[in-house]
Length: 254
Ligand SMILES: O=C[C@H](O)COP(=O)(O)O
Image 1 (cartoon, rainbow, N blue to C red):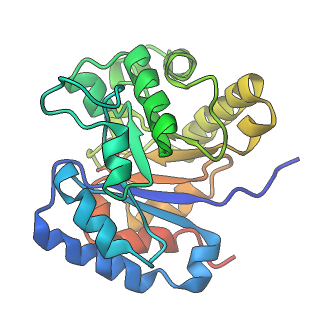
Image 2: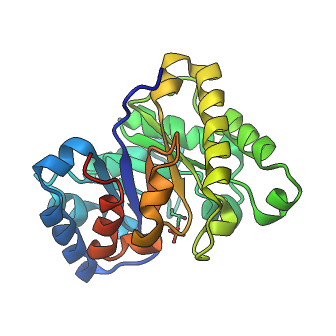
């Protein structure tokens, strides 16, 4: 039986945004009214420098502010890193871990991602754990093997629907304007659901699975209507409130 899952639309600003970008949070808040708040959760993950002021700007709006990465440890000699506890302390409610750009740029393995997700849970943050295949892997026909391996290695054993969100992002669709067909998205999300249910039982049945990769106002409705797509992780189109809210509108008024 399909259970109702409240969707989450999360914006990942990546390495974009100076203080002036905080105005976009105010603009999203203005468009996130009471009725919408009941139907969808919103999160915005600005660069680390803006987490504290963004959290202040979002007070009372219902918008969750998040980090884009965290260290596995709570403190220590790790120059330049940020602990999950520090994000929580700054007002964050969630953190993205295992984004493909971190996996590629910083050589993060599934084990590292899992340790970061465990740190998020320890700190009381919702962990948004990213998985997804490269173009080469897709062309070799090993998408499900790759995603299955990433899920097995990256998710904490203690994951629950309240503490962990999966984001499926085909690497080749990120920032390229290319998206998989809805059939392809359905296939991978169905596989992820099955995998989550096998490992986490009832919790896996209601854990949110986001799609990410070139989601825009123009394609959001189609992508968000795919079975087992419980929201989106949005990059470029999350930088402007109008685009971000246009994607939220893709969920329809039901
Ligand atoms: O975290 C977000 C994703 O990497 C998607 O980025 P994009 O929407 O710019 O393709």
